[in-house]
Length: 319
Length: 291
Image (cartoon, rainbow over all chains, first blue to last red; front, side, top):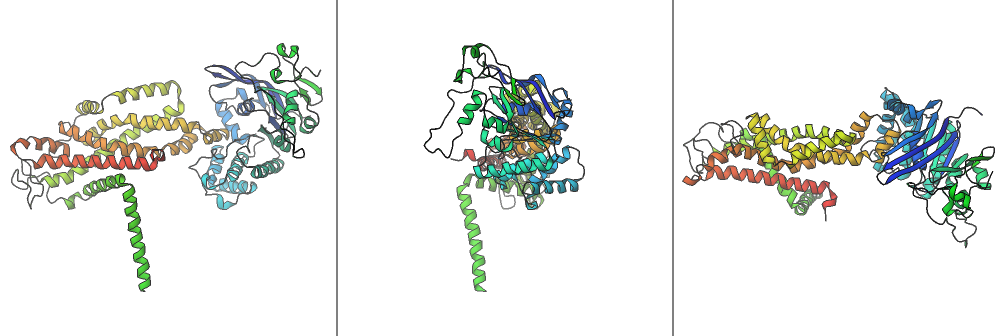
């Protein structure tokens, strides 16, 4: 296997809030090879978005990266100067945000926002920038007649297409998509997912797809990391996780997917709620909600172990 | 042909009906707009509207209003009406200059303070709050006294009062725009601070500027009149409502009522006009105020 494009090692991101330290990302290690797409799933507040933002060093105040490294193509992003980091954002790693309704500057035409992205990364020629913008817009299925439209003239789905175009215009090596379809209706959602898959192939980029929807992630991702309470609890390729989920949390998540063929089946849910990350439970963080919890789980934290090549799980039931 | 004319006249009728309806719904704004536009027209066309030279005696001193001098003449025989017409120029000039000056200081400071945050923000906010806590007219008097007379100086002393208003408004807007997703998205795509400030934050906070301006305009005219009344305004022959009110009111007890009355009335009407217009604009631009 070649050197990974992105190598996150022991990353810890804490928010130093007034009521205590929120350990939003706690000792996360992940690898991503070139051209691969990784899905990041978990409930709200488990640290998925913070992890995505931490890669770009955009964690909002009072959050900070307190430990670990993010090695991207041989560069440790946590050690770069702010100016070097800014150059990487957009040109080599780009982000697509959750809410397309508010992710575009309401006072700028969409064409202008696209060319702006090129300009801040050193494209000097306005005509060249415009050509590139029009061509990327056609890639995401928006005609050139929309170039001078303002965001409010577009539908939610189209705005998200524009956001994707903005992320792709500089042909980045890695795109981080943070719940890119959550604010959209199901039909538009499917279109955007197909679009992202096509473009990923076309531009041969890597993708980190963050979502709370495990079935959606399975559509896009090759591999999947399941996060719980700031930690990765299971990691493996999507198919094998779906076939045989190892971690009790992953199992519960998969069982909670409604099945259309079993109409009278009761909806399965996971009892309890994710822990407060200011004072997470000792031992395994999932133990208060875990049907298999033992006394050991309450005091000792399990290690992440490789059960089979490429299949990692953080649970005492294995190994 | 008749049909065509009918359509035209129908269109014209509808045009005015719609205007009248708008005027009825927004009578506050409409009244303000009429008063303000009258004053602006007066200022622009002063040489054509004013029948006489405002700074030279043109008739017998203290002539009561008559056909020749419709608002009468003052103590040295200058035409009061002409002075009032020219006085609108001074009032507007100082108002606009003052607004521009406070904008020129308050906007950049508010922008930086709100965007950068931290100790700088705290220090600037403290300075602005203490300025704001100071009674406006007193502050203006002190500064006007220190700077001496002159259009620029008077405008500057009035401007100081309104810097905190612009600063606070802009800073508050920046604070909310700074946290918006489109700014975060721009950062995520590598936009530098300059781009974010001038292409993302600034255009999105600018709409609040006319609101502050329209609310301060009336106050600026009043302050200017106050300063002139106290003798801290422009040098003597300049036609100025506050100054004329002052010189006119000395003659009031002797029965020469017209000098002070008409200049005082102008101050009241212009202040009222700008207040109403400002209130109306605020209501139109800020839908949350509508019931």
